Amino acid sequence: MSTKDAALPRAPRVAGALPRVLVVRAPYYKTVVDGLRDGALRILAEAGAASEVMDVAGALELAAAIGFAVRGRQRFDAYVALGCVVKGETDHYEHVCREAMAGLTWVALHQSLCLGNGLLTVATEAQALARSGADGHNKGAEAAVAALQQLATARLLGSA
Image 1 (cartoon, rainbow, N blue to C red):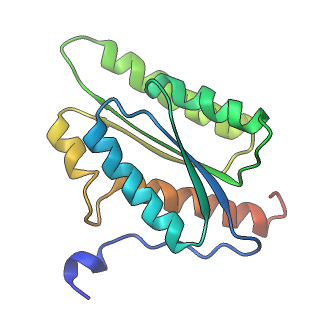
Image 2 (image 1 turned 135 degrees about the vertical axis):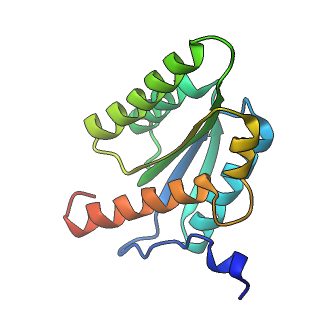
Image 3 (image 1 turned 90 degrees about the horizontal axis):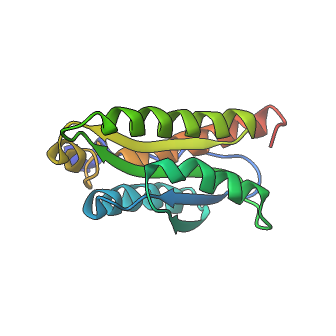
């Protein structure tokens, strides 16, 4: 195993039935978000999870889409939100980041969801690319690990 491979996040063990996970992504920065998706799907496959990927218009739509999924006909055990917001010349960045993060937190808490948050909020696209590559710093992989760890906790406590 190389040093690079040793740094890769690994899927946590989740007791019970194999998880069903919805990955919701806002692909405005397509290369970045594709990298986040690939990292998340690697972790989910390693865990034996069934996964579906759905795109939304932007970061602000991530939380609402997850809320729609909760009220929908299909049942998911966990959710992963992926996207990227890069700072621009106006304060729009601060508003989008704050509200998108608040929305994800709100939906997770109020719906008691196992949610991994992989929404990057960065100053530059280079920072985003560094956090979405195939190495051990992939925030999509980390978000999938977080969602699975939450699911493992929920199942252990009898909440899922």
